[in-house]
Image (cartoon, rainbow, N blue to C red; front, top):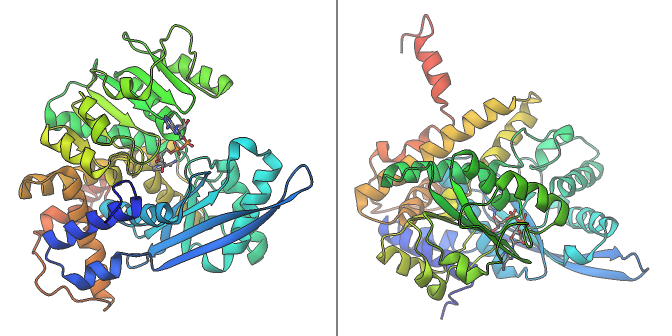
Amino acid sequence: MADETNPFHIVQGQLRRAVDNLHLGQSVYNLLKDPMRMIEVAVPVRMDDGRLETFIGYRAQHTDATGPTKGGIRFHPDVTIDEVKGLSMWMTFKTAVMGLPYGGAKGGVICDPAQMSERELEELSRGYIRRLAPMMGPEVDIPAPDVNTSAQIMGWMLDEFDRVRGQHLPGFITGKPLVLGGSEGRTGATGRGVVFTVLAAAKRIGLEVKGATAAIQGFGNVGSYTAHYLHQAGVKVLAVEDVKGGAYDPDGLDVPRLLKYVEKMHTVRGFPGSQEIDTRRLFGLEVDILVPAALENQIDEENARLVRAKIIAEAANGPTTPEGDQLLASRGVFIIPDILCNAGGVTVSYFEWVQNTMGYYWPPQEVDRKLRAMMTKAFDTVYKMKQAHHISMREAAYLVAVHRVAEAAEARGWVRRENAMEIPSDQLQAMATPLVDPALQTAHSQAPGNLG
Ligand code: NAD
C-alpha cells in the first residue's frame, strides 16, 4: 500500500488521477511514474577535526520531454531517495504548469548543515557537483537552491562546475550571486510568486486583501519573503513559526522589525512583544490566509481539522497530505496547489538562465513585471480549467501540467495518446505563449507597420 506521507507515492497518485482524467492511457503513466535517471553519490569531506566523512547525496532527473531538467538541491538530515524522486516529479509538473521549457529534477544530500562549518559545507557542495558534473549542464540539468542551500552554495557549485569543464557556464545553475550572473529578484522570487497567486485567489473568492490576516509556517527564504510581500500588500501577518518556535501577535506582527530580528537571532522565537505559538495553534488560527512554507506533510488529516483559513497558499512543496487535502476540499477551503503557488522561484530561475544565455541582464522592475505576468496567467489558466471541469485547483493544475508533458512526449514519438480528452486551446493558453508580457504585447500591437 502507498505510504500516505511518502512524496514519491503521493505524486504518483496525483499523476495517476490526471492521466485517467485526461484519458491518456497506461503508457503515459508508465513513462512518467519514475524518474528517467536516479543518481546516488558518496561525497568525502575532510571535517575540521581531521576525520574524513562520507555524505550520501542524490539527484533525480524525472523527464526531459519538455527541456533540460531543472530543480533545487536540498541539504537536510531527513533526505531520502523517495523524497528526492517525488520532488523531481513535482518539478516537472511545476515547470509544465508555468509553460517553462524545462523538465523536472531534484537533488538532496543527507547532512545537517547546522552542525557543519562553512568550510565543510563548501567542500561538500563542491564534491557533490564534481560527482554529478558528467550528468549536468545548462542544456542537460540545471540545479538551484532549496531547503538549507543558499546563493553562496550556488556560487561554490558553479565555480566547481566551471573548473571541471574548463569553461564559464553561468547557465549551469540558478539562484547564484548577482556578481556571477544571478538574476535580480531571484532571492525573493518564490515568496513574491506566492503573494501574486494569493492576490489572484483573493480576487476570485471576493476577499479584500487590505486588512486580511495570515499565518505562516516556516520562516526561511520562502516564508520570510512571503511575509514581507504580504505585509506590503496590506495583509496583517498574525503568526509565524520556524523549527525553533513561533511568534504570535493578535494585532499583527511588525514584519519589517521581525525580519531584522531574524537576521540577528536566526529564529522568530522570542520576538519582542510577541506570544509563543506552536504548530497546531498556528494552523488553527482564525486567519484568512494560511501559508505552509516549511516542509512536506505538515497539514495532515489531524491538522486539517483545525484549519479555519479561507485560502491555503502552498508555498512549500507537498505540505498537504492527500487525506488532509480531501478534508480541506470538502470544507471548501481554496487551496493554491504547490506546483502553481511556489513556481515563482523556478520562473525567475528561468529568467536567470535566459539572461545567462544572452549575456544581457534585466533590471529588477523588468523581472518583477514578467514574473507577475506569468504567475497571474498561470493562475488564470488553472482557474479556468477548474471552472470548466468542476474540479479542485490541484486537479486542474495537474490536468494542465500532465497534458503538456504528454503532448511533448508524443511529439517526440515516445508515446501515443489514443483517446485523449480534447482540451480547448483557450484553456491551455499559458503553455502556448509562456512569455507574453502584457506590456510588450500592447507595445507590439501599437507599433507602426504591425499589420497583424
Ligand atoms: P529554508 O531552509 O530557507 O527554510 C525552511 C524554514 O522552515 C526554516 O525557517 C525552518 O526553520 C522551517 N522549518 C523546518 N522544519 C519546520 C517545522 N517542523 N516546523 C516549523 N518550521 C520548520 O527553505 P526554503 O527555501 O524557504 O524552502 C521552504 C519550502 O519551500 C520547501 O518545501 C521547499 O522545497 C519549498 N520551495 C523553495 C523554493 C526556493 O526558491 N527556495 C522554491 C519552491 C519551493
